[in-house]
Length: 166
Image 1 (cartoon, rainbow, N blue to C red):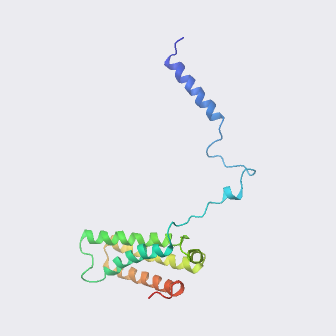
Image 2 (cartoon, rainbow, N blue to C red):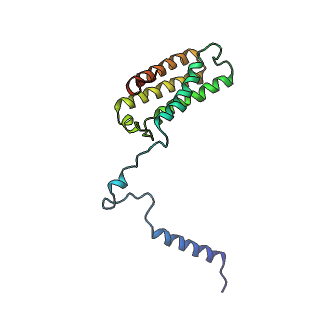
Image 3 (tube, rainbow, N blue to C red):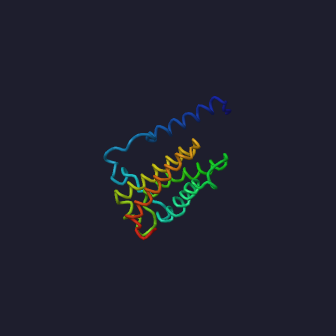
């Protein structure tokens, strides 16, 4: 008995259709009997490092690159200089989002449960977006304004959450 290509393809198609008919559609929502609170709510997203590490290694580092750009001898002049500012300005709003997540630090849960913490983190992101726009448009004046917003966000947050910091 020989199988033609047609017979093999039809047999394969039949197996696929039979298998597909035995499974639930991928996009079918679970019935109310199947839904449980654990299945409905998404798991909390946690940062694998402490908020302090994020602040020191991302926010502080990137902020100093932006603030240093106000010094005449360090002001961006070349395409490469401006790209450096763009890269660091991009880190600030992203970090503002990340510091809203509970991390591994001893005070992280307390921080992220505070509405004020989220207000300050949003202010960091907003200032970072302003710095990014300034860098992308190569506006030194707008960068100075955005840097002032960033200083204000950092200082007001530190007064409440880290008063021992200068």
